[in-house]
Image (tube, rainbow, N blue to C red):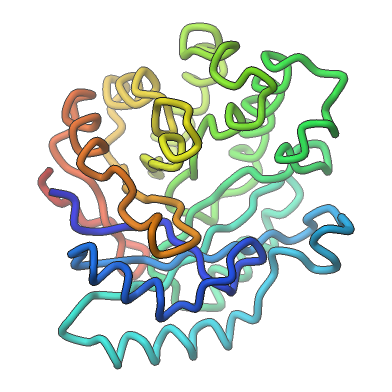
Length: 271
């Protein structure tokens, strides 16, 4: 049984209106023992009218005050870790190092959310690209990021770009992008980092978690061991989404353990 959710968002993230305490209570209702709240920090996110100025930035000092208070309130009931999902872009290496060294985070997810100064969520911004071209462009950008940014613990939702294709998974497979994906996985392993199994792919109807089981299997065969499990939940009902299936997938892909982090250090938990 997987008893921790290491990818969760609250109202500190622009795309969630859920109070942090509601997520804690939701995790307790799901029977979790440990959670890590990982709100979005995306510097240089492109302006759009829908989100306004300074989208996906938050007051880190207030974040710690709020979450420390919840740690005290729920001590003995659930372990609350403090994390962040850091939006990675090749030019943000200095900023990422600065913010992660300044604060005592337990865990940092590093994710690609911006491609060519645009958010792939808005598919029309990439209308000139086919799905396959968009996916390849995102994987190439991920490799570029890994050459320039190292201030994170796991790479978030690898292959999430498939959510935003016109035909989603129809233009996607590990085999079709194996060159880029292998380079990413080898780079991550060589950096001493990990990846996550993000169950939101199931929530969005793709039929697979992020990354695809073929990518997970390849990561394990290449020697990858560090893998956290997260729902990418933005509201209580998303917490621990399909974690029973996630456990089965990990075992079928050759994993015997999943990973939790505390103080930026990995701890391995038997599946």
